[in-house]
Amino acid sequence: EPEVTQTPSHQVTQMGQEVILRCVPISNHLYFYWYRQILGQKVEFLVSFYNNEISEKSEIFDDQFSVERPDGSNFTLKIRSTKLEDSAMYFCASRGRGTDSYEQYFGPGTRLTVT
Amino acid sequence: RKEVEQDPGPFNVPEGATVAFNCTYSNSASQSFFWYRQDCRKEPKLLMSVYSSGNEDGRFTAQLNRASQYISLLIRDSKLSDSATYLCVVQSGGSYIPTFGRGTSLIVHP
Image 1 (cartoon, each protein chain N blue to C red):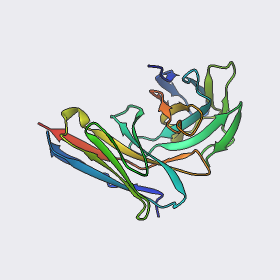
Image 2: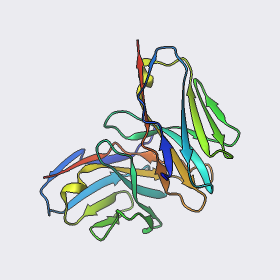
Image 3: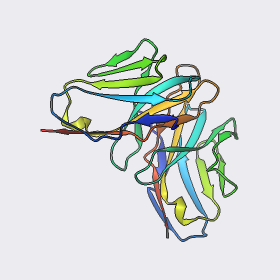
């Protein structure tokens, strides 16, 4: 069964450093997403991406965040200058196209720890 | 008012029991509804979509009540492996951005 993969599984970084989280969505999917989940809290939407551009983003997704699909398979989330409060699980998700494909499939997540 | 509300639980039930969770949503324009399952420190996994007519998948039954703006999940004959957090997810018609509830914790014990 095809699956979304993410690397690394755990990233530790110092405050102020840049991090790049990587995702490989399911190959025939067209819509890509990033979410975060702070420990003990709900999953929060960050950004959606379609046709090589951001389609929607939340208030959380400020100028410190950016996304890219550099090579047609990887989908990355960059945090330019990490803050302590960026510590969370970051999940990538993808979905197909069409009215039968609203379901999103999540990757295993990257645990980001900012010290 | 929170957009998607769930009773956090935990619901503590013996194996074989039937358990039901509800989830209420505030946006009357919501059109797509899902139940996801999340194990501790793992990713959410799609359990089932919730259709207007309701749907059943084995021991799991999901229902939608648009008038009262809630969805439900019924689990029959609970297994130990059903222990997890169940997330209610709602999408409005104009956006594919899902809104997650905080989840309901289920613990099935022997």
